[in-house]
Image 1: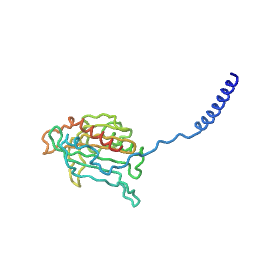
Image 2: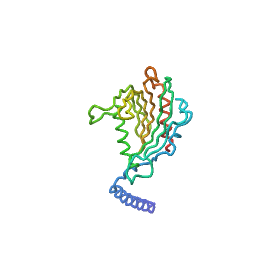
Image 3: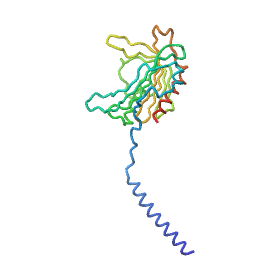
Amino acid sequence: MGVALVSGAVTLAAYLVVAGVLGAVAYGAEPEEPEGGGHTIPEEPCAAVTIAQLKRVSATDPTSHGTRDGTSSETAPEEPDVAACAWHATFSDGTLGSLNLTFRVPVGDPDSNSNAQQFYESNAVEYGIISDPEPEAEGGREITIDDSRELDLGDDSFLVFAEEESFPGGVGEEPVPAAVALVHVRDANMNIQLRAYEATGADNEGKPDLADDEEALIAMAEQALASLA
């Protein structure tokens, strides 16, 4: 019995010494910074959503797709920072429009989570999801928010239905009023935007309403995020 007690005491003492050393090392160590990045621009952005999902908004063959490098310097990275795909679509209200899917990493620093978050927040401010601590002077394009809310996708995400003026296509052109539904998801260094767009001009009589396409749009955004895994 005495030997057992001594052995136990020695074992306990050894444990305390080791634990003390490890504790001192852990206490004195600098906390590790979270790793940046994690996502790269997909080579085939049009394949990020399924054919069945596209059929729900009568979207067939892409009208345009591709990738680009947003920097213009001679030392620009070879990897693109934006990939996008667009389709013609007919939405639930019967009106004609377009569906656009965009993947984006920060220009010049594609692995930066913080820069990606800044891009997300600038978009969230524009659509009234979060308040702007430093409101800009009036004079930007007009946006009327019909409905908006945050979603549970990725690190940050929101859904918004709005009426807005498009950016003019050229000098002297007037902005075109449009109905827009946007799902914006940020995950680590990647921003994903799925945008449904219906012009309110002569091709679409009455006021376009994208509310009935909400489920389909969220499902496509979720699939686009899952495609990065």
